[in-house]
Structure formats: structure tokens, C-alpha cells
Image 1 (tube, one colour):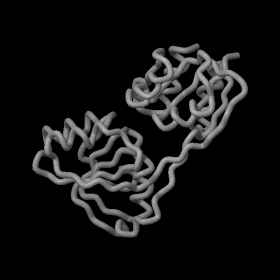
Image 2: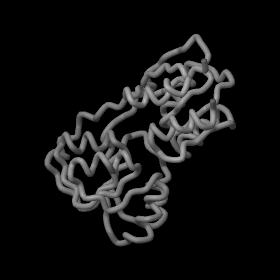
Image 3: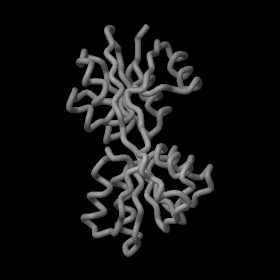
Image 4: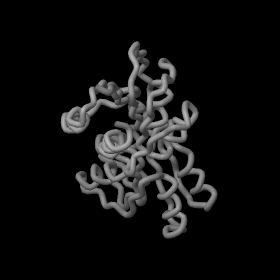
Length: 217
């Protein structure tokens, strides 16, 4: 029976998708996020146009009871979480680069508040700067590696962020396993380890699992 490692803990339904496909599964969190303590300025704050790129940011905005009139977000799961909290979604894109292109084309002249982690992909802010879009960046959380060394080999490893790749391979060597990534940004980081990469069709955990079952086994 082939063995897969998930660098993110999964829900029961996600686990079952893998197990029912004939894989054995090991799952752990390769990283964790921690909100910064100096965010009191955000409590009950109101912003006109917010850019949100992660579910972690959504959770912190909810905790601080931040109001956003219009939200521009990355990822369908992030958008769903925002909608559950009754935020008004102006635009959704699968990648930060795509969202930056939409903003730079359709929303020139507006100012934005960009809510993100301290470690984040540079594509979105770089493209906004290049196109002279006014924005203020708010770092809400930090990403911390959770070191774990595995003694056995895996046939495949599923990755969900560049930070997860960095965390895993800091303590484990590449042993020929197939690498499956949630998106192209994660895949770029994975190519520093090996060129043979599988990329999910959508930026969701379920899509990564579909890619595992479809392409690897």
C-alpha cells in the first residue's frame, strides 16, 4: 500500500478521500501561525477596500471585529469564509498575481489595505507597486516552523505552502517521493528540491487530494 504524507492536518472527510483510494496516510502540521500581539489598533476599525489572501487573516479580522466595505481576496476557501461572516466580496482570484492584475486594470485610483502574514508571496504587492496602486500593508501574523524528522519513506508528500516545504525539508532529505503542491507558488518553492512536481487544478486541499489519487497512484 502506497504511503502519503500530508504537511497539514486534514478533516475526517479529507482523510477518507485518501484512505478510500488505497493510500495509507500520515498527517501533521509542518507550520503554525501566530497572531502578532500589537494589533489593538485594528479593534472595531473600518476600512474601505481590503485585500485578504489567507484564511488566517480572516480569522484575525473576525476576532478584531474589523469592518471592510469591499473585499478583494485570494482563494475560494478564503472567499467562502469571508461570505460566512457577511463580508462583501468585490473580486476573487486563485492567485495573488491574478488579483493584482484585476485591481491594477479595473480599480485604479482606489486605495487598499492589504492584510497578510509577515511571510507572504511578493507577487501581489510588487505588481501593485509597479502599477502605482496605493495600498497599506498590515502584518497580522507570523508563520512558525514545526520541526519533525521522519525515519520512514513516503511515496508522495502533499504541500500547501512554501513555508511548509521549507519546514519539512529542513529536517528530511528528498528520497525520490512525488511532490504534490496546492498551487504554482508552492510549486516554485518545491522545484528547489526536485523538478518533478504535481500541481492541483484548484487551490484547495480537496484538489490536492484529487491530484494525488489521479496522477500519483
